[in-house]
Every structure is written in structure tokens, then in C-alpha cells.
Length: 455
Ligand SMILES: Cc1cc2nc3c(=O)[nH]c(=O)nc-3n(C[C@H](O)[C@H](O)[C@H](O)COP(=O)(O)OP(=O)(O)OC[C@H]3O[C@@H](n4cnc5c(N)ncnc54)[C@H](O)[C@@H]3O)c2cc1C
Image (cartoon, rainbow, N blue to C red; front, side, top):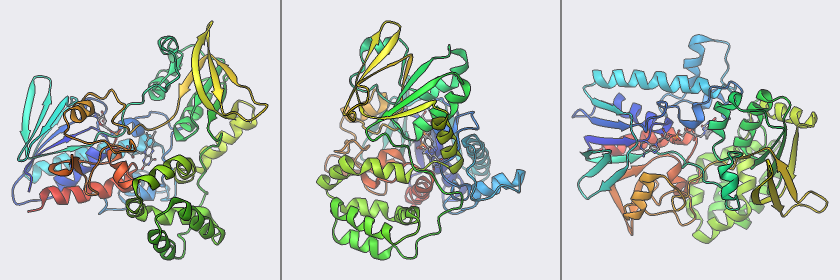
């Protein structure tokens, strides 16, 4: 059992692991230092939004923090409003309230169970793992632990290549849409806004800024020009039996063959969502069957289709976005951003791969990068991740999907794995593929708590 543990990261994954640990009553009390990075406790980017336009993309019934208490979030909501249903898509702000309430409860419970917890509102700058101990450093402080867990979420977004230094300096090219949305009221209203990327981040930005800036026109570009799919009003009934499909996929781990099998399965099902959702618990196992070449093939050819079908918008969000298009305020374009440069008072985007007849350039008062998550530890300015990689304490996933790790979260050190340095959440994408949302994170938190406390 690891008695002294550092949990590094202040978001939902860290909060869930901490709460799991504090609920337990091991033979000896725990000493936990929780380094939160200094942001709002537990909420992170996802649940830190103050806007009620930003909804969860998972139904309330599936958003419990705890694998052992599946109705946790719904119970929390219904204590205040019994009319809320498990199929509802709630504001993410409410999920942040739930996380905060659960953390407060867990801290009190932990104290009652005799555990010693320090909440340290700073970012960790360096971690040095050794065979028997892990040193964690911030500022002048350096502390020794039996084990450390990285719960860093996704990495800060980097500007896309092709964006000129002048465009970045002008303040008209926005890399962090969340900071922009929080301050939108203080900015002059732009006439024309271009979004690069058309996933769920773009959807959040469109919902918020179209309401704050009612005179603004939006153009969104992406390789395929397609929005994420939407959930149905009623939850899709689980498909009868996906066992055969999964078996067939396992037998032949080849992306082209998998797509063929999926197309066949979808043809026999009334709602494709049911087939896709039935694969979700098996995705990490299936991902492990693919070799490096097949994974790269998946990322090149199928990732965009998977992401837009898997990460769906709530139905009411889909309707709002369709209304924006219907009013002529949102234009979607197929294409790839080649460059962004300053042109007079505006920015000008050069596009590539646009269909014949479409514009090759776009002018905008403001360009917002809405490309979503970054998990590539080789391309980040994150100081702790940089230190871990430079010192050879962690190894990048070869395809840029976080850190190399075992499915149980133990991080790779060259050919071998640390027994006392773990990750949870987005950094495990290369190992598990499906590793960013709460339904997966709560399972990881529970298993990791078991592992940390194992005799
Ligand atoms: C906009 C958005 C909407 C989402 N909606 C949903 C949804 O509806 N349902 C769902 O299940 N999932 C959703 N997700 C997925 C989401 O990633 C997870 O649900 C969850 O928020 C992940 O939590 P995390 O703790 O792993 O990461 P984060 O919330 O990103 O937290 C990472 C934390 O690490 C801290 N940190 C970073 N570096 C250091 C350091 N050196 N030292 C100390 N701390 C550090 C940061 O300050 C931050 O507090 C959404 C994600 C986003 C971005």
C-alpha cells in the first residue's frame, strides 16, 4: 500500500480519485497532498463555464463521479428539483456544483476516517520518480511521496502552424476560446468571426458568442465542414447484442475491415447511436488489438468520423445551431487553414483543400481556434510535462496521444514501467483511446484507488 500519495491536477479526475481514496478505510491512514494548479477547484475547463448555454453532452443519469454509486449526480440534482430526469442534459455549471459538493463531503469524510489531506493551490513544476519514492517540487518546496498521480487533463492548446507572429500579437487570433468567452462582454463586437475547427468546442463558442454578439456573422471551417452529430431526445435503446460484432473485430484487427463490419452492423440497426454506444465499454480492449500502423491509419482516415458520431451534441443544442444556420449567421465551409496573416485592420485566412467554386481566402475581425483537445506531450509548453519528458521520466505515445502507459495507469520509463508514477484521464488516450469523459474517468479512479491501497 502507498501511504503518502501526491495527486497532481485540480480537475474532475483528481477530485474523483481523491474522493475515492478518502472514502476508504485502509489499515493505516493516508497522507494525501493535492496539488490543484491554482484554478477553480474540481471544475477544470469543462465545468468551469458560468454559462447555462453550455450543457453536458452526457445524460444526467450517466454522469456520476463514482463507479460504485451510479445515480450520484442525478440524486444530487433531484434533491433540489425532483422533476429533473436521468435523460436530461444539464448545464455543465451544475456538474461543477456537484463536483465541489462531493469534494467537500469527501474531505470531511476523510478527516473522520483519520486521513491527512493538504490541498495545495499551486502548479507542480517538477516530478522526479525513483524506485522507492517520488519527489514533487513547486517553488522552493520539495516533498517526498510513496507514489504520485498525474491528473493533468488535456494540455493547453498551441497555435496552429501557419498563423503568423503578427496575427498572434494582434490579439485577433484567439488560441484559448474559454478565456475569450469569459471576457466577451468587455470586447468590442466583431463583425465577422472565423472559427477553425467544427467540433464540440466550436459548438460551445457559437452558442455563447452568437448570443453575446447578436450582430456578428460566423464562418466555421473544417476538413469536412460537418458538425458533430446530435443525441436523440430519447436515449437510444441499447442494441440487442454487440457481442458478435466485437468478436469479429477482435479476430481481425484491421481498421478497413472494422469499418466494413460497422457499416454492416449499422445497416441492421434502427439507430446507429445504439451500435456505437454499445462499443464504448469495449473500446480500450479493441484499441489494444490494433498495432501502431493500424492506429495511425485510424487517426488518418476514421478519427474525424468517430469523433463527430461519438461526441454528440444534446438535441436542443443541435436545434440552436441549426437555427443559427437557418438565420444565415453561421456558414460552414470545407477546407483547411493554410495561413493566417494580418491584413490592414483585419486578419486574412488562406484556405487549402476547398471544393471548387468556394472562396480560397476569408477576411475576419477575429479568428478563434476551436480545434479542441491537445494531448501531444512532444508539442507543449506545459512546464511539468516538459520536465518529465526531457528528463526521460515519461515516454510520449508514438502517435502523440499522451504518455505511454499500462492500461492500469502506470507510466512507461523506457522499456519498463514505474510502479509508483501513474496517470489518469486524457494522458492515457494512447493506451485506452477512450479516456477523457467522466464515465471512463470514474472507472479509472476506482481501479487506481484499489491499486494504490493494495497490500
Ligand atoms: C468543454 C468540455 C466539455 C466537456 N463535457 C463533458 C461532458 O459533458 N461529459 C463528460 O463526461 N466529459 C466532458 N468533457 C471531458 C472532460 O475532459 C472530463 O469530463 C473532465 O473534465 C476531465 O477532467 P481532468 O481532471 O482530467 O482534466 P481538467 O479538468 O482539464 O483538469 C486538469 C487540471 O490539472 C491542473 N494542472 C495542470 N498542470 C498542473 C500542474 N503542473 N500542477 C498542478 N495542477 C496542474 C489544471 O489546473 C486543471 O485543474 C468535456 C471536456 C471539455 C473540454
